[in-house]
Image 1 (tube, rainbow, N blue to C red):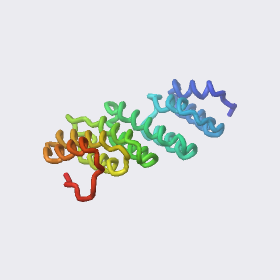
Image 2: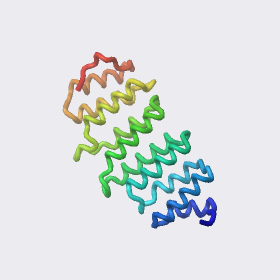
Image 3: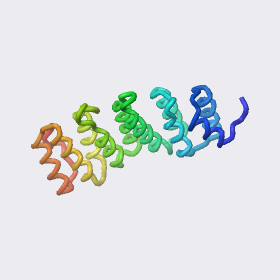
Image 4: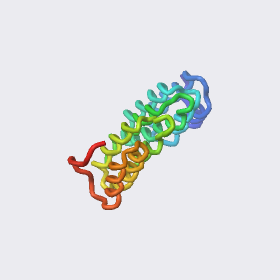
Length: 184
């Protein structure tokens, strides 16, 4: 296969509809050690790719370029969140928010963005799953007040006024949660 220029790789990522053409460009990007998150964002927004193909590409990029893994996982989560109406991919969005949190556990961003993807009318992702994820985050994030605030809101949506008030109070006092906190 002829060597592709960066511009040709970029063009294929952005507009090609043929998986083999995209895959060839992807292989060359990896072989050429192109650690450019902006380039891979084009790949992730290519609407011709199926969720499993996006996962394949994202996992390979994260493995090859570990310092990009947080951004890769966050972008995949965002893509799956936005494309839920077509593929119902809230599970995949949450899966990649979890992976991003695994890479940078002290960052509140994956937890907060996961909470933002909650669709109350459909209860997706399931509110109890989101609550558990945010509670995990509150234990490791240095400044968990924003997570406490989201937990308070989610518990309010779930109809658990006691826990909603508890986390609202935690938001105001700013203390990290302890093991003896009341559970949902």
